[in-house]
Length: 275
Image 1 (cartoon, rainbow, N blue to C red):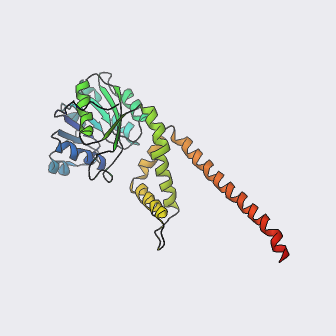
Image 2: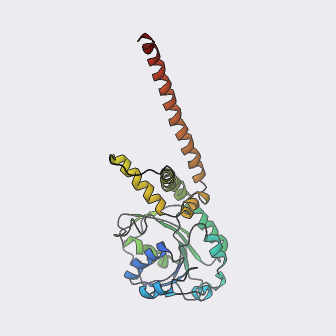
Image 3: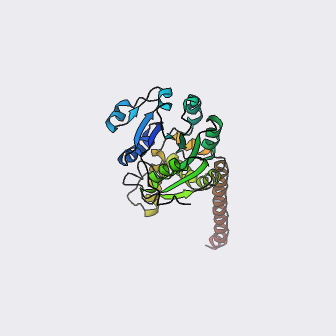
């Protein structure tokens, strides 16, 4: 379901928790759109934020009391629970919308519902692009979201409009369905890329187009942290089955090759005895 194109994006006060590369990447476009940004992070990004025109808070309580319309969770998957549990969430403004941008969805939904006050709105999202793929714009990239607990539809619509106005393909989908699909696509892609890295494949003087694609997959996969990759597995309950299915598929291919080799050897043996 797409967000109504008739809804306009009003100026939002957006606080970002976790101002790493992805948070910075999103922030730059949000600033261009005229939104007011604040940030907090375990790493001191105060100088970078000053250059970008973003208020940086080292004090988490002050950050939560800063009258944010939206608080965007942009931590790593593995650190989410620790980060959220360290926040004095009782300081949250009741009208605040909490949205996450993690690459798995059931896990952050469950943690957010567990940790946050019931009065707080919750929106789970996954922008299907990043600093590399989206460096020239977000047009035609998918933006997946579920309105987990929304009372303030106006604020939620204004936030979603940030991505729709950049040309994203807006996909409303349950967190469960997202994780099912992501396990068979994103996680599988990362896994094969990591396997190719372990094989230490390198470009050759006689590359085929297919092999060049494998090189690109390897390089793209290892450019992301291993924490991200492990998070995609540990916190997506459907990913474990994909690992088992991948292993089983490899064994099937290997068995078919072994059977074919045996057939060829049997066919050649009588002919060789006549020579």
